[in-house]
Length: 484
Image (cartoon, rainbow, N blue to C red):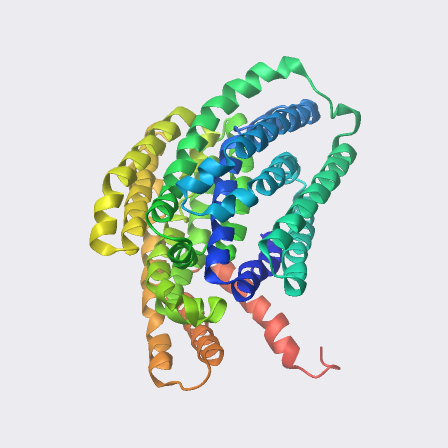
């Protein structure tokens, strides 16, 4: 998490910079290009890299062979995507009503190819419990990516510049990833056709699941792109801004949880697997619930501060979209994958896609750009409910055992109550937007922590840890040098 946090701070510079050096049409084109990338990236992984979370903990001796097989399969998938993008570049530009896309789809194809193969690195390291190395890889990679995306654009702000440097970065990252994998696995990093049947048997159903997953996750953006111009799509995409802090918490937590649950399941300790799930869920709620309350209350300030007043219309979309963060507390997909419930995940995602497709047109007609978000939120919530139901069946649990219900309710209540001082600051404070945002956020954070401690929401151990942290980092910073 620490690695992803440091990386996210730097990658946040990318959209904040691009939105200031590109006009709205060019920024909308950039968002459409990376929408295509995100869609193909998730599908072209074909479950091969994620299968390493399953195979390496169960068969560590042959870990390097599983990794080499994944690298070879992802190379083939990436080349297929590159060829497909080149052949259909004009058709894609026509579908998305933006002729400028055709000029850059080959570049996004190269970026996709190199990124696909390199994605094996961090997953392999996490699966082997090399957490420090994985964190370092995340930090270095994202810092370099931010530099390649930002610095050249300050000198020559065009999409051609951006895409050229994107390809340079992805190629360099691939070379570095292959070098690190060779050092990690040595001679064991070699193809093993004998392992292909097991990997394909796991990966293909997972690939189908991911295919439907990415379709239902991105359909709302394609729907807006098909119905509106690039400028309107830019406003909508900013409203659907993915807060990077969510990813750096949820993704590593989910990855580590999968590895730990797989180990205890293999050793025949199902109660420990349940304890791991409940612990991760509660800890994510401690961070995500107050984050959602804060983002909803400050949606206009956050959007206009990061993306300028030109995107003020994105604020209501962002406020509603922030509710997806609350649902990220439930990392149910990871639990399903630990229990190899890929087929169930696939059918749930089919249902999600059907719900979105059936409702998005009517909701867009009734609520405008808010409509696609409503359709996506409802489908996401429905999927979480179905996942929890399946967990109960697979793990033989009652509804009362599926989640840390009292803790989640208490955290939700504290998060909502802590908003009151923030609203007062917004009503009374005068000054620049950054100052108001900083004071309001600091007040909210202090109120939230005090309520957590005084109401007993956090455990005795967590309260002690918080006290130690405050003494070392806050009081220690204020103490004279000799006393420190």
